[in-house]
Length: 354
Image (cartoon, helix red, strand yellow):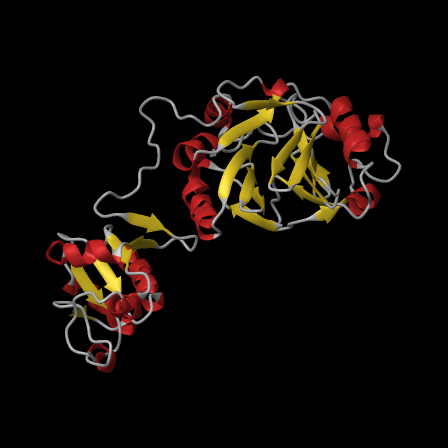
C-alpha cells in the first residue's frame, strides 16, 4: 500500500493519500494544494477514486470539488454534515474501497456534528480529523459541537482500537505528525488517563478560543464541497504552452511543443560553456547563462517572451525556473530530461556528436 502524509502550511492541515493496486483515496484535501496533490497522483500513476472529508472545515476550503474537475474523482463526507453536491454521504460502518483495501467509516461527532474517523481495514492506522489531535482535540463551541459527544466519540470509537493503531489528525500546530491510541489513552491531557466526561467539559469550556479566521469563507464553500462561488478564481493553470506541474512545484513543458515554437520563446541554457559546445550540443539560438551566474544576469533576458530553461538532464534548469520567478519572470518552464532527452528524441540541435 502507498501512504503519503501531505501538509498545507497556511492552515496547518494534513492531507493523506492512500493507494493500493493503482487506486487511491485522498483524505482532507486543501483547495490551494490541488496542483501539488494532482502532480503526486500523476507521478505515482494512480487513479484517484475518492476525496474524503473528516468534517466541514472552518480553516480552509476543501480541494474535493476542484480535484473532481481535474481528475474525475468523487467526493464523500458525513451524512450529518449538511453539505450539498457530494457524490456520497457516509454513514457509520460503511466501507470506502481502493484496490483491495478499504477504510471503515466511524461517526465521531463532537467537534462538529458531522465528524468522521476513517479506520484502515487492518486497524493499523486511523484518520481522526479534528476529533482527536496529538495530545489534544478539536474545539466543541461551534458547528453543533458537543463536549459530551466528543468525549463519547473518542472513548467509544477511537480508544477501543488497538493501542498500536497509529492516529493521524487533520491538523497539528507544533510540527508533530503521528501518535497512537496507546499514547493518547495514557497522555492526552484532555481525554486520557482517568479524566471523566465532566473533567473534559470543564477543560473545554474554559478555553475561550477565537473563531477561525477563514470560517466565514471556508464553511459556506465546504458546504458546497469546495465549489467556489461565482467570480472566484479557480486556480487556472498557465496557458502559454502545454505545461504540467511536478510534485516538486516545477512547471515542465512538452519538448515537442518547444521544438515547434522555438521562435516564440527564449531558450535558456544554464550549463557551463564546455557543456554547451560539448557532445550533446545545444538547441539553436539558446542563450547561454550558467546557473551560478543566472541571478546576477537575469536582466539579460526579456519579459516579452516566455523562457524555457534547459540543462543536461533537467535538474539545474528546474532550479533556474525558481531563480527566474524570484527575479520577477512569470512565464517560465523547465525542459524535463534536458539535452539528454532532447537528443534521444532526435530534436533539432547544433554542435555535439552526431
